[in-house]
Image (tube, rainbow, N blue to C red; front, side, top):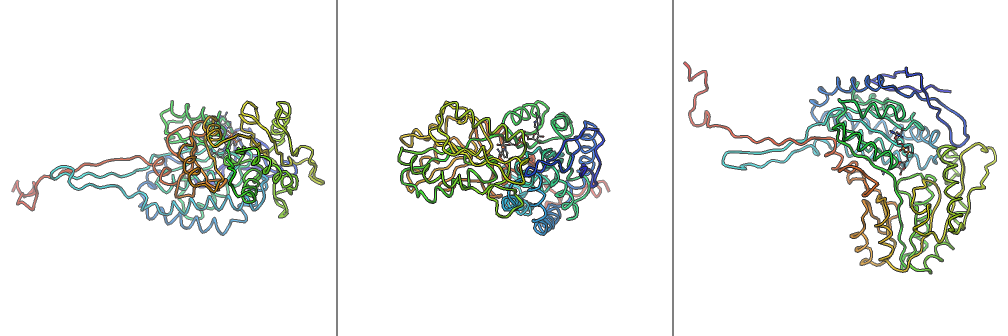
Length: 498
Ligand code: NAD
């Protein structure tokens, strides 16, 4: 069994706190590594390293910083399969899902390679007679990222490539459930020529997070995880005078109109609800069928597909869906399914009895499908974060939009229709950060920005794209006036004195 480490000031550093967490292979239930849980002193050491390295990096011209990112991108592409295998070993998702999510992370590096252009300021010649004004964006300083288990490459890469391209130094505190791949990312970034201390990885749990939030030298905190923790981090970080963006949970509704292309919609729902075993903050977890005919048609099409899902270890190329992250989470998701039954929803497909020969100790759950779910039910109100899809039936688009807007979360939503007017109105009225039209998982590309509304995001800035650049930089506006000089025959002071 491997003992993992931290990565501080360009070096592997073994944990000294004496506290560890087990890392499991979710397909077998085996413990495959143990990760150190950093103490306040170890966090302080990483912050000191990041602070010491900062001035030289912040003064490095953006063009030269970008060259390190170009090299990093090359190394990431060359190591894509290795990265994906490490993700699958500790997270459990299929290799195809792991590869896809790493590729989305690499796209953020590609975006960050354009940093010389992104940091070009604004200039006004002549804000008054003889006075010019210009704005620049300068680094914030030492930044920290705290990330969830479900995308151990992509989510950290929403943050650190942009922060570092903008001239900051960074400390990543990855999820303690799948931490190994962050260490690999750090090795690759240093192999690309990043100076020591600019990107550090500190492994740990809530104690390490608390230490980062209390440390006065950490200037900005980027968080992604569950809503209760996001809210707490936003308040604690802000109370400590830090800039904070904290992305939380979700309950993404897919509205299906009577004129939707049903086959295409069913395909889209299968991928959006059961991909990565539903452990995605943009997973489709509620289908809002507009009209009973739509509800019947969807359930009829979905049920056999859900029953037929090929559930298996993520390393097996034949698997369509891997296990959940932990035994505890598996039990939690099963308890939600039971609650749904008790509260009167119709369980059309029950994946709870799934057993996989040879993987009896793995955290597998078959796909589950509920029909006739109502807004009062727990399975409608709360984020389940598993392969459980709920069908809610309404009579018109207004009722569907009302459901979307009244839910506490506001991460993503989508509408399936052939009617441009309905799609336009729905997109306009949705109180949601990311909206799809016949696109079930409307995740913005790296050069746009990712983020929800309501209790899915605390703070002002979304992730990556221009929002990311704004979050990781401070604006400065310089106004200049020059007195008349040599051109008008004014002598320099030394000559005037002669
Ligand atoms: P989590 O909130 O349990 O953990 C996230 C991070 O916070 C981890 O690094 C963890 O160590 C740390 N943490 C946990 N409890 C803490 C506490 N009490 N104090 C301080 N730090 C703490 O989330 P998770 O289970 O790893 O991830 C799943 C959640 O993340 C889901 O709710 C999902 O919707 C959300 N998520 C949201 C987005 C988004 O973009 N909105 C993206 C991915 C995941």
